[in-house]
Amino acid sequence: MEDSLSWGTDGPTLRTPRHTGATEHREDAMPGRPNPTLRQRRLGAELRRMREQAGLRGGELANLLGVSAAQVTQMENGKTSVNADRLRTIAAACKCTNEPLIEALVGFTTSHPKGWWERYRGTLSTGFLEVAEMEAHALKIYTWATTYVPGLQQTGAYASAVFARISPPLPQRDIDTRTAFRVQRQQALRSGGAPHVSFIHEAALRMQFGGRKVLAEQLDSLIEDSAAGACSVRVVPFDMDTFPGAGENIMFAEGLVPELATLQMDTAQGVLFFDAPADLASHRATFAQLDSLALPDDESRKFIRTIRGRYE
Image (cartoon, rainbow, N blue to C red; front, side, top):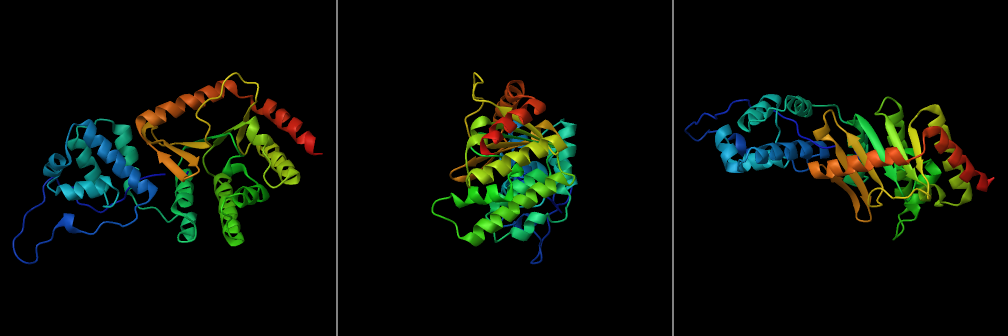
């Protein structure tokens, strides 16, 4: 999925001094960022959640901070920067005592170098970039694939075949760009990224994209990744007596604290992100169930080899 929050330069004071005269400066009149990133929006969502848990309306929090209600709205939409002092001031106003969460959010207020995915901005849709951003900031990544091998483990040929199936067909240059981006996501994760646990349903292992040769190479790649320890690959066979989750391919990215996890879901309409506590709790339960149902890594490799044997 690529993650979700906001950075900043706001002042730390609770009250904004009033000035008179034509040169008066209004902090809340500063223009907001037009396209906040997933991470910036997530910080805003956490600020909104903090305020709502305190039972405060936007205008009430604005009065406590000495700003306008419009600026509170912009902060909560990720469109206005929030620095560490302002964040702590908001937490104090909302009587939030969850120090691990506050400190984790402080990390979202500091500037970071632009990620490698920014080179694709304007070339790929925002959803692609946000998945890479989410992965870059994850503490641990879990995927659950039911229809095709997870993007983080797809070979170039398999990924290209997945993109080629889209209707109406994509131009070849778009397929090539999406494939290159997917391969770079894998490289970023393998060169020091978060640990990855991949749960794959047997259906996804048997579904052919690009023909028998492409699938055979994809299965070989899964076996190699698992054996090398690049990621944990756990197979859920057809004969299991249940099917955890709703059936979509999903990714669950753990944050520095449980509250900052992010769920990403692939749908026909595009990439969706979820961060509500109820959604996170529900899918944590799904992955706990998968952990109890799926074959261990060594048995999963044997299982994949058995399927691979059909394509000798």
